[in-house]
Length: 137
Image (cartoon, rainbow, N blue to C red):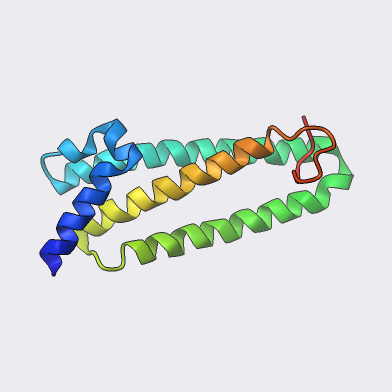
């Protein structure tokens, strides 16, 4: 059973977009693979934090009418972080050791990349678009 999980985990990691981009599937050992997988996740996390700050600044610049949206963004981001961490703990729950690190890091990267797309969309809100919760520029 553990051998099957190990093979499944390596296959999932090798086919993950960031793993392919970094060529992590070619790593000679798990420690090297984990280092490789951590790089795109760190980049994604940094990018997400930068986009979050841009959204906060946009709301501040928009004035006091947008304070409730800023409060909602902060609450949503805190909830999203809790979801991300819980989801990736679930995904890695049947792995242990360095395989757990690899599976969890790949999960964190994928979910963070999805959140980046959301934030980029928020930054492109058009004036009058009631489906977008952020002011246009």
